[in-house]
Amino acid sequence: MEPLIHTLMRGADWHAAQQAGGYHGSADDRRDGFLHFSTAAQLRASAAKHRAGEADLWLVSAESAALGDALRWEPAAGGSRPGLFPHLYAALPLAAVRGAVFLPLGPDGLHRFPSWVP
Image 1 (cartoon, rainbow, N blue to C red):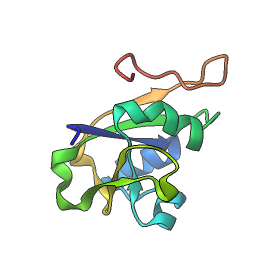
Image 2: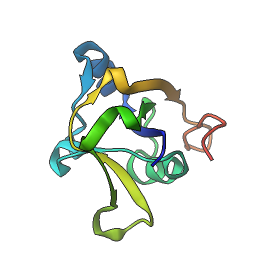
Image 3: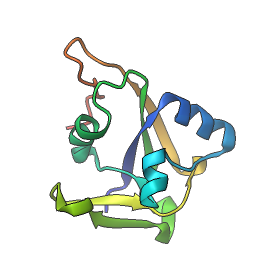
Image 4: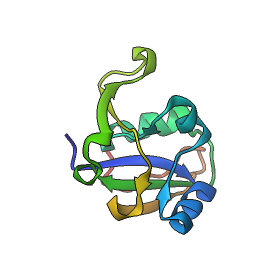
């Protein structure tokens, strides 16, 4: 299990989560019944598939150990991507968040990730 897991939040969702003290998910998360997270190695592919071209995007990192049994490692829906993905079957408490970084778009339209993202 990764010590930190990450989710890509739209700016409005991140600001609402800060006001509410937790994140209850995007419309996609609520439809699927869990919050979608990624490992650092999965982030670029997740952004390209699910958040391509979105200008107001935040990379929010959470401590996996703080999420307890509500965190499950599962395959992507339909097995469309290899590996297991962290899925949180509860709201994300702000107490588990270890950082949030704005992801600007580069001139090529791709998100610019911090150097620690492979």
